[in-house]
Image 1 (cartoon, rainbow over the protein chains, first blue to last red):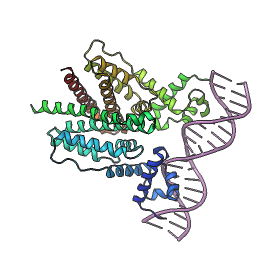
Image 2: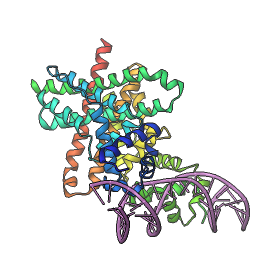
Image 3: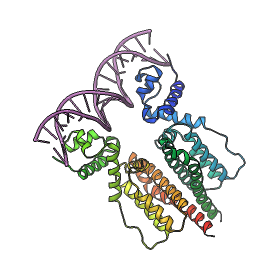
Image 4: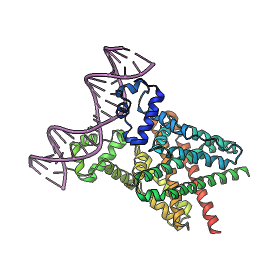
Length: 188
Length: 188
DNA sequence: ACCTGAACACCGTTCAAGT
DNA sequence: ACCTGAACACCGTTCAAGT
């Protein structure tokens, strides 16, 4: 069997979702594809690069159109909620996306969307960047914790899911409110 | 040579600070102590437990008294800034503390301090918990990114250090402002 | 272009046995 | 109580060679 880069990413996503990030190893993925682990290095320079492609695919599959003619708050919330949904759709998705973003190897879409949304809302560039990063840190942190809890799989975790989702909105609103306050004090 | 648990933690901290988290392995630490890796399992059930002790020690060494008779905003900022300083004091400190906290194995002090500060400020329990988590997610995310950037060691990173510190305050103020707004709207 | 086979330099953890 | 020695079951990555 001969594969292309996209075939490898697709299979990596399956392994991730079925067995989790600790089991997504180059050797395991090779076995899954019926290929030597070394063969993967024809498609990717190293494991980090592969993970970056996996993170970008998770985000691409979760991509939804942003509300066009909406208030900046609504757009920012939509980006964050969309990011959350995309990450929750795959086992360990939050950890994969957050790690890849931290290493600067990919998953840059949401950051760019947030920053441009905040600049369009009239925030000066430096503040738009800081505020966008603050939102992202919140989303990555909250959703990673939420997903770990969900995947612990206790009956309690499943019962708590709606409260987690509502907690996500609450914390998000806190940060958005802080941004709005700063924006209004600048406009005056 | 015979060691106690605290000796092992101390040496682990040295290895962490000199060589970084990827080189803090059970085998490496054993070599550093002049002991077989298996000997470490007499002191710690596994590597995660050892890392939890390391994280708690990082926080203990960075501990400073909180401003007693101060506004809740000032206390919350002091907790967050103190946490940042403690994590920045050791190589890869942010990653260690954030990981241990995420796994629920330790590093619980700052979360407890923030939550009690916010409850004392009159926030209802649920909101105090959510707001404390939001602050923590921000601090862990920001400082991890800041430390990675600093440790990349480029001339640019060092020149950017003061701006990073000021960015930390800016983002932190955003979240605090959001909490204050929610608190005031509840008091009315 | 894509893969094999073999090797290199590692991991965390367990466990019987020693002092 | 604390440690040794050996083993088990893995890792990521490189590289010459094959088709």
